[in-house]
Length: 104
Image (tube, rainbow, N blue to C red; front, side, top):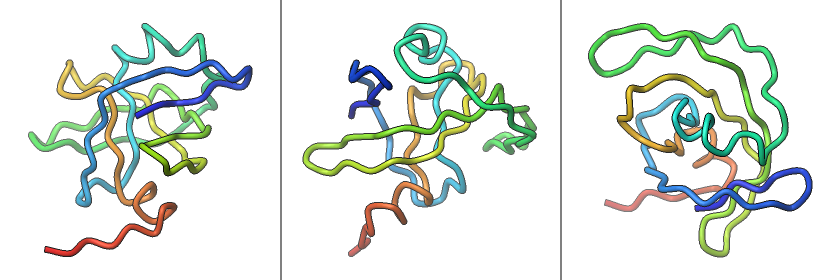
């Protein structure tokens, strides 16, 4: 997948689609490495509950274009320290934006 910066720069990352995630998320590690290529984070009061029941405060929200294969949309992402568990999670907000249909 690709995150697109305001100047057209592209950040490539491994993304996981998670239809159980209530937020789109970017790891702190990915943000620290490539966030300078994207627009600035906006302040966020979001606290994210993760699988081990820990509560982690968001570092901020990034909003921008996201491209997966031939599909592109603008989405919001919370940036938080997931301790390396993932690069990017595409959750329900992204699935809604791209009008995904889940066919088991």
